[in-house]
Length: 461
Image (tube, rainbow, N blue to C red; front, top):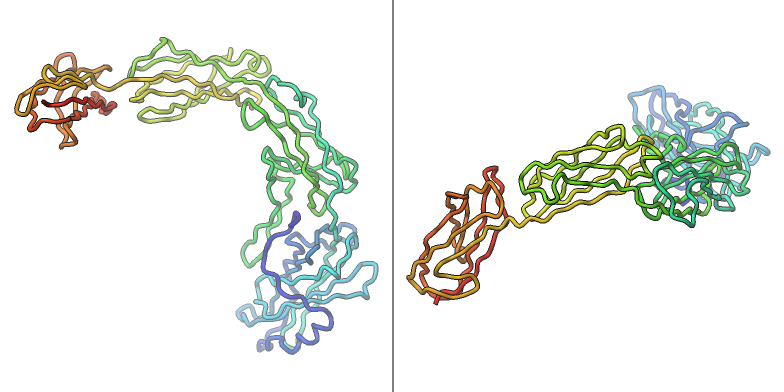
């Protein structure tokens, strides 16, 4: 389906002969109501042009949807009416094609389809609408003018970039400048572009009472750029979707009917522009605030100063993203408390004054927050004692701030004991039977963080 079209239920079209047959099925006239000329005229879900010198260009390969809102002088009567549409070539007004929409609701768009075989490619047509209510009919609307364009641009556009050539690794840090050319196709009026190969579809929203809401696609500068003249060119200045890697910009030409050409791609490479992340100490302590210095890529800073950093924490108790302003030299400092019980990861990108966002720098640290478990009678991964023989188990922390331990033997209900001197704890336990045991222990800090569990395996003789 070409540009400018929109899937929608289509009513059967009747020719001039069919109109006479349809008249017998026209809804009965509403008492004391006079038909009024249809308003809100649209063709192909685009605005009607009443200027013969400025027709609307439309694809009509499967016919052309025309529509208008019928009415009567009695606004309280919703009895159905008929809308008929007439179309003719402006070069031969005698060649009239008529289509009819029966049982239309006053106040709502009534669509009909002009047949494709009545609309020649490259020909300009006028069409008009009339409301019919029983034996009464309104005046005809003023004509709308359309030019049929069923031919897509023959050539894909050409793309060049003066500052990011195709076959080398380019230093990032400034927007990519592109020149798009119609490549010899005279009726190209603009271009559609995207970093994704599946380019957006041009569509039209339908509002209240079925009224189309057409929008000039070139008003969306994220994906569309108008050519400087028919068959001309356009320039773009774009920041890639990420700071480094291999990128392709996909582009197609659009003619006046928004028919799209074949898609052309421009592939280029960008070297890393990631910042540097340096902690104040080589191995920051778990749960202790630590400062990190963020420094810009030197080549990136020379192109456009870094103005801020985005710092994302991953694996902590409350992962977050913080924005950190940069100093004049592009550096910044951020203070973070790392509390991931297995470790934590930082992902940092920089943003330059010209809008460039770097690729991400990564920094990570692993933590072992499990407690140390020891026993005088029941050694780890060994055997000892016996059924009814008591043993002592000692829990000691590997991180600071531990206030309690929670433990369980073989999945029995958990028991929590407070930590004592040096944040350690001791428990006495007597096995009820011999056999294999799994003691699971985890510590809890004063801030309420439940640390990683440790499984202590042993056998009771």
